[in-house]
Image (cartoon, rainbow, N blue to C red; front, side, top):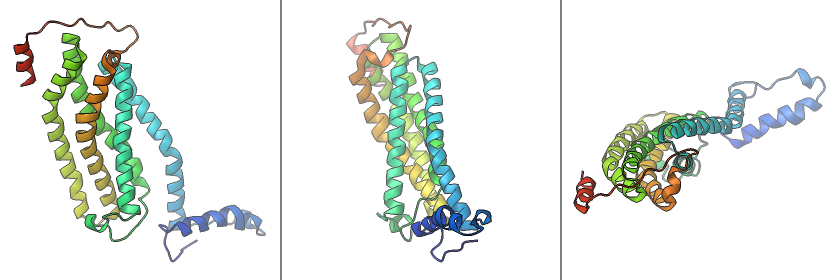
Length: 251
């Protein structure tokens, strides 16, 4: 069993375990029956296994969300946009987590005493939870936009009214989640702190920059291409008086 003084979090420990298994023991006499064990080696094995399966998990989550969103909004383009936007939010959360935890940027302000690796299970747990929350906000916004588009056939008007009617709901829901996740920073467990910090940052970015700015902007740029779906019938725009438009926008 291996018990390095530096602990499993030190990169030298990981390199030592791999070197023993891959180079030293196979060359030693009778080394085929010798194993490197202990809690540090087990943690390293878990990290390697989790890292190798993380891309597969991300792919499965994205594909399932694409299928469900296409079935809901009847648009391939919007489903692809949602997947990309969700990945932006999650990628930003991973980046902030690495900067704070591994690089030590403002680490002491968030309760991290020193630079340390991100705990193995944190990225795997963050991915599905954050993707689910991001899809909730996406469904809130896109459902309303789709209703307006089906009624008027005007993408710009649909995006404007959809955003006006869902912005308060999305930001309020996100504020609650950010507050809940931030409370984990008050506890003593460093791994829980990491997960809470990453999820709070992701929800904050997703509900403000992504849903309130990027998604409407991309939909404006795509225009009618937003609603591309094989066999889909494009609704005709209905006339609306200026007063009616202003009244709806103020709802």
